[in-house]
Image 1: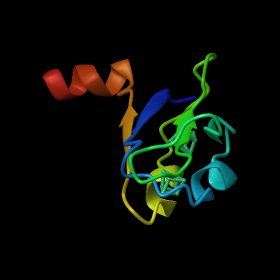
Image 2: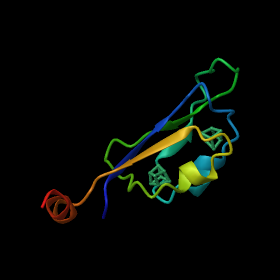
Image 3: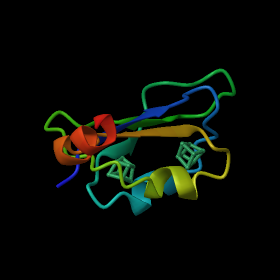
Length: 83
Ligand code: SF4
Ligand code: SF4
């Protein structure tokens, strides 16, 4: 399965809680112990086992475009690109 990761702009997040509900890998949670500069509890990635696939569903659902997705390019495709 593809590997990926995300960066959530914590100060952009309005704490709506949508992204954790759609993540198929269940690696996003709301940070209840932190307030961002807007005064909201932001979403955070908690993925110690590298389960994020880079599917980008979280980024698509985010109404404020706070999530950037990175996805590993498979080695096979990398070598074709390099040729
Ligand atoms: S990219 Fe996909 S798997 Fe990764 S955190 Fe977002 S919804 Fe979850
Ligand atoms: S969908 Fe966007 S605004 Fe809503 S909790 Fe997730 S990162 Fe924050």
